[in-house]
Structure formats: C-alpha cells, structure tokens
Image (spheres, rainbow, N blue to C red):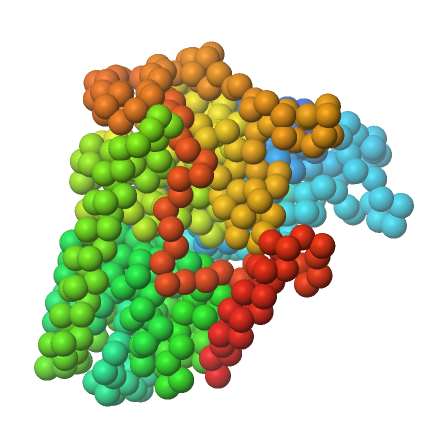
Length: 620
C-alpha cells in the first residue's frame, strides 16, 4: 500500500480539499475553506497545515461563535450542499463555538468544527486552559460539544482519522441527520506524523439522492388528499433545501390547497400566489391560522413542527384532523401520528401532483384562500404605511427595506421581535430572498450570518436587519466582512432595549421588566433611571463600516439609496419605538405564567393562560 507521511493536521486539510458532493448531476467541492482563530491549541497543527496548503483558504474571524454562524448561513444558503470548517484553540476558543454548534444542529445545517484539545500524552498536564476533573483524565471542555453535535470524536492517535473522516462526511452530507460535527484534536496529536494510505486523499464524491415516496404510503396519501375538504399545506425548510418551490407551486395551482409557511420555509411560495396564506403559527397571518384551525388534513412538507409553527399545539382544532408528513427525516415524518412519507420534498410533490390529477378543493375553499391572501396584503400595506415618528415603527422600517430591495436580494435576521414581524410582513419574491435563523433564534447571528450569505452568493445584496440588543452582542464581524471585501447593508434598529422580551413581559403582566436599557436609579434601586445613550454610528464606524444615521422614513429611503451605491459594508442606524409593535393574529404561544402572585396584572394574565392552555392537543 502506498502511503504519504503527513501530520494529522496536514492529513485532515488534504482530505477536506478532496471532498465533493453531487446532486442532480451537479458536482461541487463540499468545503469552501476554513474559518479560524489560532492559538496554542491549533496554531502548530491545523494552523501550520492551512499555511502549507493555501488553496484551502483560511479566513480569520473575530469571534469563534461568529465564525460558526457564518459557516451555518453559508451552508443554509447553499441548501446544505457546501459548508466551512471552523478551527479554534483549546479552552475558551473551543467553548465559544458551542453556541454556534447548537445553532447548526438545531437547524439541521452541516458545519465541521475542529477545536484544539488537551495533550493526548498527558505528561505535561494540566496545560494552559485545561479543565481538570478528579474522576477522569480523559476529559476536557470539548466534551461539552457532545449534546450539540450530530457526530463527535476525539482523535487521540493520528491513524484514528482514517476511519473518523469518512464517518464525519457521512453525517455532514446526510439530509436527515446533519448538523454540527466535532473532531476534538489534542494539540500534540495534530503535529504528529503518520504514514497515511494514499487512498485517503483521492477525490471522493458524496451523492445526495432524492428518495421517492414508498408506494403504499403514497397510495394512502393520495386517498387522504382526495377525501379532504379543508386541506392545508405547511411548507417548511425542507421545501427550500430540496429546491421544491416550483413543484410546490404546480401542486398548489392544480389542487388549490392553500399554503402556510414556517420561518424556515418562508419563500417556498411567492407572496402574491393566490393560494399563499403567508406565515403560519404564533407569528402567522389571520388566514393561515384560521384555515389551520379548521383543517381536516394538514400536509407538512419539510417541517419539524416547532411550537411556533403549531402555536404550542393549539393551531389545529378540528377533531377529525389528520396529518401527512413529507420529510427526508423519519424522525420528523412520524410527528403528530402522521402518515409518514419519508422522501425528498421535490420528488414527493412531483409524484403527488401526477397521482392526484383531477382532484381540487372546492371553488368556495379556493376563493376563501384568495380572500385571505388579498386581505393580508392590504394589512401589510397598512403597516408599511405607518409614518408616525420619529421614532418610527419597526413595521414601517421593514416595509421601506422590503420595497427598496430587489427580488433576488436577501433579508436576514435571527432574534428579538423582528423575526416575527418579518415572518408576517416580508413579501418574498425569491425562494432564497428570506434568511431567518429561528430554530435557535440566536442573538448575535445576524452580522456573521449575513457574511455567510454574501459569501455564498456575492451577486445578491444582503440586508441584515438587527436590533440593538443583538448588535451589542456580536458586531465585530463587520471587521471580518470588510477584511474579506464582502459588502453588507446592515439596518440597525435602535429601540433602547429588548423589544421582544419587553412585549412578552407585558403579556405575562410584568410590564417590560428587565427589557429596557436604563441606568440604575439611586432613588429606587431599580433599572428605571435615564435611558442609556449608545452611539451605534460611532461604534460601527470604528470597525471600518460606512455609516449613515436616519431619523425618519424619508431619510431611511435616502440612506438605502446611498448604501446601494457603496462598495463597502454600510450600517444604517435608525431609532424605532419600543412600544409600536405589530400585533399577533389568531394565535397563541405557551409561556407559563406564575401560578400565584401579589401583582394584579400577573394574576389576570394567569387566568387567561389557564383558559388558553386547555386548547393544547395531543395528536394521536
């Protein structure tokens, strides 16, 4: 057997450069490169290998969590067919990546993590930043990655990567079981040499199939659809990952079945399709939630049925409701005691369209969906047109950005009240025009994620919409975007607090406690003093961004025009009103409220809660 003598780290990088994926005849490299921050735990191993092999490009980040977010957004934008590796040093560099790992795994997005680790030979322990435990020496902070990784391994000998690397790729390229993959790399093992078999470094193609529905289950699904009077489709992220938007539109046109979209599935159907009900669930539209409540058949396509989608299991109230779940993951297909159609979304929709030919919902039901579509569009226009201020409303800002953005441009957000407003209000015109991280709703994802989206498709303008809370948590990747020459337009909404938590707090009777940026009041001892003044414009400018401040809608429009002409990343800062929120529509979310309290508002909220929680269902 021919061999090649390399360090463990060199072998890993050489292996990564050779991995390709293929779907529908299109072949492409799986890894775009490696994000990293180098330290004593990886600089002499993975760092040296990246320097030695510059074709596998190294990208320097500012924060380890952020670089995982960038990789996640890049992979999501590429429908999980491409991704990055991310490397960190031992200790805090590694544990900084745990939140990013959780974000990737919960959203089912492939990302490879290569954290440095303690010495495998142990004789110099404890090394700098090593966690010691008296009950074991085979333990490090990297064990914390286990619950948030879909595959985890610690490489204690160089030859272990011969079997670990193919297993790693099996998980990363799995449509059902993908997520974060962690290879913990002891810093001494990274630098050790071994005679690796040359076959390990040959080009390897990982085929991404499109499994068709099983025949018996397909027949049953067709029978259920033909018998249904009030069916509704819930389009999830799987529609987009399988590139099934066109197939969905054809199915809907033929059958008239209306569609509600999850956060991950928004953009599955164009907003002006007559059967599009828009967002569904807690942050949904009236039409989507009313028809979901009445539905006798729910066809879930590529959705995992989060509590925001099901309104904490209160969305579907028809006592005869049944579920057909089309999903590439068996785990999700079986939810709600559904008829589980384990298949690729596009393949399943194309097959179903042929199989149910001749079936259509009633003209009255079709007309009802069209009516809800038009009524919602009018409500969106109303919210977009609110001109009061300054400070202006968040809904009006979203409207201005939406009207200004071109069809292929991308809006991106992750946390706070804005994802809910965007889910309801954003008029999607392209399947990839709406990018929301809402599986984990991770504050700080926004700017780092925007960079990943831009790297995935530089031809699109990327509008990162971020609240002041998320911005303060992780703004520094503006520097990375500028370093790499990727232009973002960041619309920073300054509402002096946590808008989402403030609204939630008011709904449970707590009057926005702990949600406003206020100084400590010496007289009361509480955080109800003066509003803190943060100069976001100066902060963004210090990181190298072009900065524009806007006070009203006219100035925001001018700022967006100026930003479009810029070649550099631009941050637009605008003050918004913390109290002017977009209402909820026909839905509810289970947030348990204190059962006893001396506060009248909390007691009243508890009474309402006890009524609402009775509507929660078990779907058996």
